[in-house]
Length: 319
Ligand code: BMA
Image 1 (cartoon, rainbow, N blue to C red):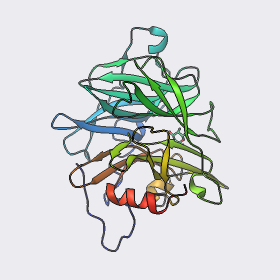
Image 2: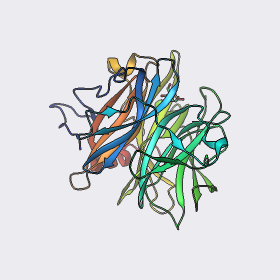
Image 3: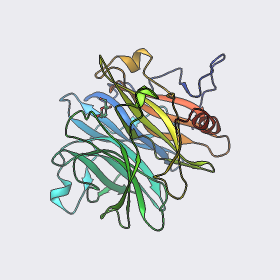
Image 4: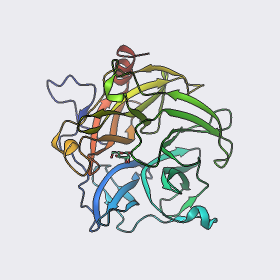
């Protein structure tokens, strides 16, 4: 997996890759921007589903492959889902994908246009054919993130009910499904923080990469939004969720892990956005590489150690 050691003198829990951004906005002849994307290990390399907004400014998903998870070859043609039901399969728009391996296949969840944004679900074995299932929830919803294993035989997903626009609110919820068609057992996970306590996450929050199972709980990296006098600012932080009842939050970081500070995070189509959608990690070394969209324009990479992130989450917790 990609890795670069912590720079000398750096005391931050996570640090940016020195060659960021790893994916430029115009990698494809038709791309306006490539960001908020999902990557996973696949075969002897890596695969991913990328948010590529085109130069019509339409939000499209594209499949990509890489040997080292840093240099990506992204298909110039948009991803086309196969779906038995025309009403569900009709493409309107899609963005902010996540990819999760559960049991024997890869599942893609994304923000799917169906009378407004909701959570689309599909699966693939080969990143060539994608079988689209029912939308998980009613509109409006965003940031649908599956857990990598079942709970009492049920699939589990985090999501963030929203509105049809640039939602000025948002809590994270948990839901279960026996078949990825019917969803229920909805539970509240967490609300935005109090402004006085942790302002970067006081307007809305949403799950980021697929949660990582650790002995201390599910490590959830999530984005949080501050409504500043100059618009929304998207940072990200970390939480630890109960291993058996993942809607119960044990710890939640007060400070952010990363906020928009570099030129590529602060300038672009939407300034001041760092938006994580995927992470690769190594059990043995504890290393983690977090993929995040920068200013809704390019894709960046940040590194850290899972044990250090857990320690930070507990030490700074606002719970
Ligand atoms: C959210 C989503 C994200 C985007 C963010 C900042 O509502 O649309 O895709 O990165 O806004 O524009």
